[in-house]
Image 1 (tube, rainbow, N blue to C red):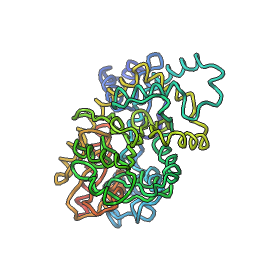
Image 2: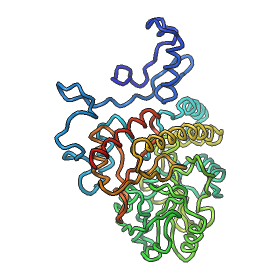
Image 3: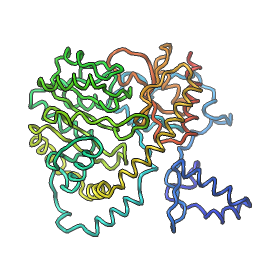
Image 4: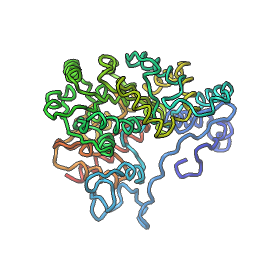
Length: 462
């Protein structure tokens, strides 16, 4: 699997057959298959046997003649980024594409869900049922707001999990939060909104989306209680983009007092864009209700299944204030005439049947173990670092004493085959250097390997 001889979809031999061929105990083979299953690399499919569903990234070849592991191979300038690496200069619009394309044996970039855990069997069963029940009319152009069956299912999902009471007609199905922001650009500008304040630190990607739509993004500091509403008022911005349930990237949960301050600001005429990007993933704290539940006329709520199932589905939802609903429906109509109907109906069936909630419970247990492995590895290999936001989400943020710029550390890590994001990418204001590290997509062993390489990189640079 590691060297490419067993691709995704390959079927492994039955344990009894492989044990006989290798002349080992069947228990040895069974244990090996169990570990591969726990790591999300294979899964049992009854009559189809054990099938490869994910393969580890192949390590870059060792330099010719040395036979050394790439992490220990000599470099002319250890830890310094080579030309063309994503950490040189200010991050451009294509920086995330460049980082995804960079080869690495360990990928700790944030926002990566465990794609090997995608419920293929459940999705396939639901898809077969949907196709069997689908009418000819369903295959035509549908409602640009999204299929009514999915909008009903999303309304139930939001009521159960986020405390939001909305009607299906209040919901617009979109191709993820990225499209939600894109649809909002002209609607906000038409309403006289040119400035959308953003959290600092806050998502570089979201900031790029807003700026791509011609909006300015004044920064607002985030502290241990969340966004500083006094600083928001000082910007004069009429709107703000916020991640209150699990702030990206610090992991802070907006406190009760700050929520009340923010709601007062919104009631005075402000507009809140609430990005609920990974609120379902929590481990050591109770759920936090969405802000939208308290002031729906002043809050535009956005969510998706990108972190719950897979980004490739391109399914999310937008619950705008009533005054924007018609304009956003028109923008969606002229954008793409609506999302593909078949995936919408399959997702609706998974939501209505309870399968999606069971999948979420499975993910929480797996992510908790991987989070624990990340925290343990950081304590062992970066003992002076401070871990932020470990109680929920799919990533942690790590800050360390400011001797080494975090872009240099991220470049040094990439030279050792480990991908991560520097915290400074997500800042507009000065602040401590750090790294944003995802853990959801990797097994505990891979996480430990990657963090150990980070520790060696930091020691080499200090």
